[in-house]
Length: 407
Image 1 (tube, rainbow, N blue to C red):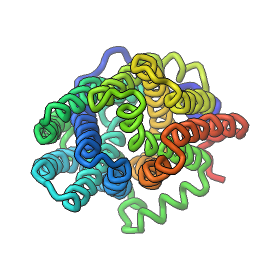
Image 2: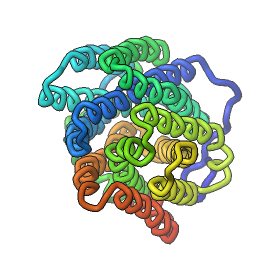
Image 3: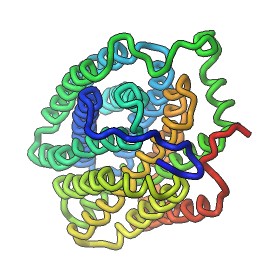
């Protein structure tokens, strides 16, 4: 990605090597299972309780797990052999999801959702940090392949999850998710060399100094890390709001029920896949700054316009547009990080920037349901969309926000 505010990508290679292909397959399986789980979890909880507030507060537990998992996963992948940690982590998470499938009491569901959220996010951060192990040269393209595979995994997940809830097979959806973790472990084993690490061993990284202190100090003095963190915060607000209220929108405004909720989420995945195919056209011609501005604006508009639409087909188009921009934004930010951050900090920088998203998801997943009872679903979704557009404008007015030189 040749940009004035990011390092230049090295010459790309044609074809996809076998390690990258295996990593992408594992990513796709993980995403399919994760989205199936989240849609079945959200729709099933709303159907059983009829309360957006309950959905919001249980999802907060899941999001707290995501937050802790992002930090933990970044630290572990920077310090442990990548293949051993990711394979073991996938197998342990599969067992946790099986236990979750048989939980019935709401407190137990909330507690287990926290643990599953923690382990799932730790694995995601680790997997993202390992992309240069599978393809060290063409990083924009490698991230596009992995992200596109994840979005392909999203295609069947939402519709299948919504349909299984509608048919009363929520537990079976959770068990399918557990199986995907086992398959992802096998794919990861094939993708990564034995004893491989995301960086060479360094004395300063093995000294036992507190990693949280190091990454916070690095983030404070590096504009690119600060910008990525703030962008992830904005995305977290929008995603957190959507987590709670899109299912309410599908049920009460579209009158489409759990199946309709699954359908519009499937179109989010379709748009994301198109984003993976088109990111090269954008990333090689437009700087990281202006790519991010465009994506934030589209995400904001797609969310803000959603509650004004009473038709499933048009709602699906808006969700597809949001998915397109969201996937491109993820690829641009991840490639910028792989190119600009010190290799020995890749995992922790990914974990730190993603923690911004997770913190905001926690807060706004909880607030969205309560706020919607006061001002309505439409008002909350419009406000979240306006935030995305306003953030795009502010970023456009910022000078060199993706500078990797410490200040």
